[in-house]
Length: 232
Image (cartoon, rainbow, N blue to C red; front, side, top):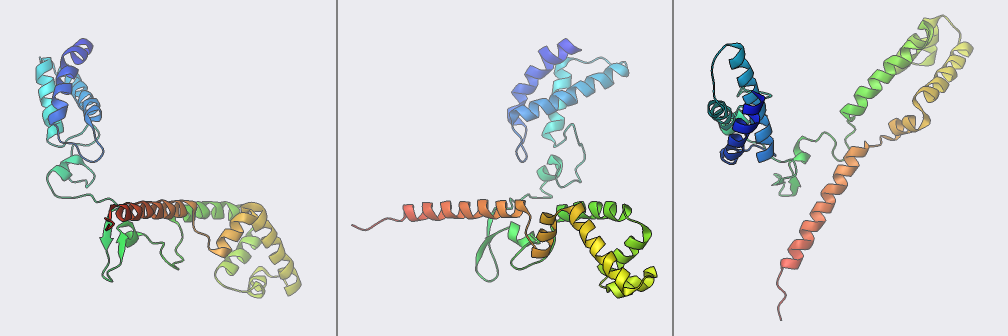
């Protein structure tokens, strides 16, 4: 089986790769690797079933499966990311960097339509928010019940006096507890993280994306200016 796969099946798949539709960033080498895996699975299944096969048969059916949109990692046609669904014309992928025109007539890119971070928006980065939630649970678990109760009261917008009443302590003890909680927050999360939350700093990946987008627009503008003919 190993010799048949290497000497008979793979060469046929290399010849057929050029005629197999490519979806997205797929190329011939990726198609060859994918169809080789499907062919190996077909050979293993046929051998276990006691069926006879040839290298030509296996290469034919593996290439046919790839040509219809099947891949070794997924053979269905309902996932919008699957090649089969795209070959059927049921879905079309668009680049987020494609230029579009808004209703106001201003130019932009598709990413601006779905991006939650725009202008003066204060939405949180989902990745940072998830990481903060995990750290927040760890922070609460590391404190006694009285501290956790006071922290939750403050998080809900309550005052330290209200937290002190629920904890059964006076105003003086509540003020000390508040300073203790503030020191623990800085020690656990770090002063830089606290400042980021207070200042509403944007995540690093967003600024990198904005810079690359502006650089691309500058290059496009420079190319258009260079293409304008200058009268003699």
